Length: 374
Image 1 (spheres, rainbow, N blue to C red):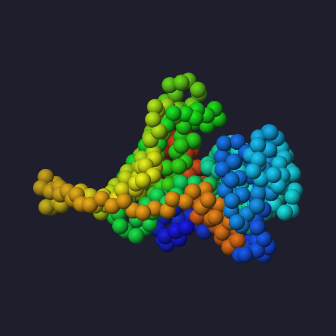
Image 2 (image 1 turned 180 degrees about the vertical axis):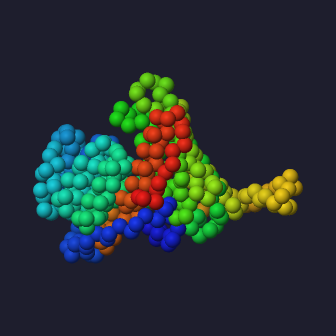
Image 3 (image 1 turned 45 degrees about the horizontal axis):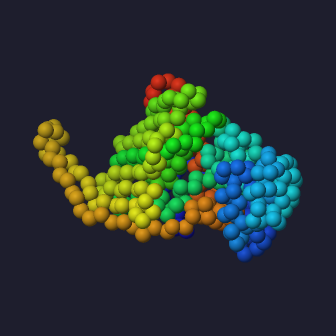
């Protein structure tokens, strides 16, 4: 995995979380970390598969409200125990960590119970359903000295790690805009809207790649519910950035085609990320627009110059992102340190999501964000 670029990313620098307390039994080259996966529906089987394949972990339990679903998820790992009771998992002293893949509204309750039982915790995005719940998770994990990690999976892809590297090295220059299209047909969800479903991906990616002195200062959102399901199925949100740039995203459950493209404009170079084009996910263009002003008093004499140079397609690691998530969780536990996408990063994403909801309730008004308090 590419080392974290020093002094480069994660938006406003939050207060450094207290390091987790190393467990001698789980130090380097010690016993496998015993994992319990909570929730075996949509995302849980992916976690089970990756933790089962990882040489340093063992999936000891799978917990789901449906015993049938739990048993189906361990068809290839019959040694794994199943249960419908969270208490069974948390009472097991051999369980070192839990990975939570349940509906967002249950994340805080399950996570807090696991932390109280002394377990390290990995939570599928979003970290929680409210900022208040997210703050409680972060504080409880720090007080207990356990690792709390948010599963911001895209941050562990080769493409996003390369983008973070290009930003932190200064190759792209100053970020001017981030423009994303994240659309597909379905899956229409009843408990969350399209923003809570798809926007966390772009918000976590921005939190990961932006320099620490560049961050969203506010958010405005517009959504529509043409199906009448009770919440937006189509949405757009924009965020002014602290350096004068802007971030914008289109999220949509009602598109006839699946599109995953992001354009990143900067002062030196520009970048296109097409996640559905495995042969060339990233394209870096030696293209920029410069404005040369003759004098500050006379903008009319400004001269616009355009540079169009070569396009480069960087070589990317194509390992499964969730494998890297599992590796980072293991490493953070063994080293007793905060993971790259820790609870604070999940909390910053929650703050923007709540800002989006406030904007929607106020006809698209611009809502200030206070990410520095994450």
